Image (tube, rainbow, N blue to C red; front, side, top):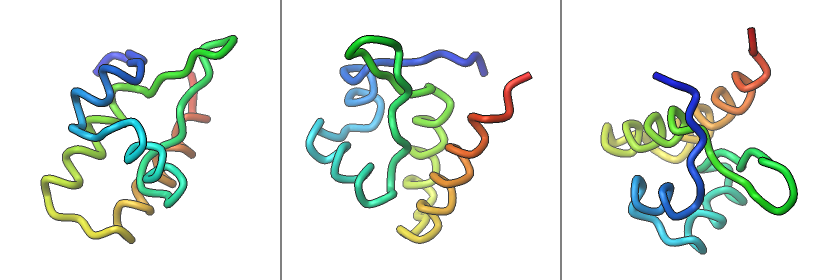
Amino acid sequence: MLNTIIRLPAVKLESGLSRSTLYLRISQGLWTKPVSLGGRAVGWPLSEVVSLNKARIAGKNDNEIRKLVSFLESDRKNVL
C-alpha cells in the first residue's frame, strides 16, 4: 500500500467517526495521532486508518486496539 496521507474529511469518511469522536479516541489511545503536514495541517497515513478499521471489524477489544495503535505509531519511525 502506498504511504498516502489523508486529511480529516477523508478519515471521517473511511472510519465513520465524527471529528469529536476521532479526537476522543486519540486521547484514549484508541486511534493514532495525526502527522503534521506543516503549518496547521495534519493528516493520517491511509494504511493506519485501514488497519484500525480492520481491527474494529475483526472485533478486537480496546486493549488490543491500544497495542495496535502503539505498534503503528512506533512503526512510523522505520523509514527507509
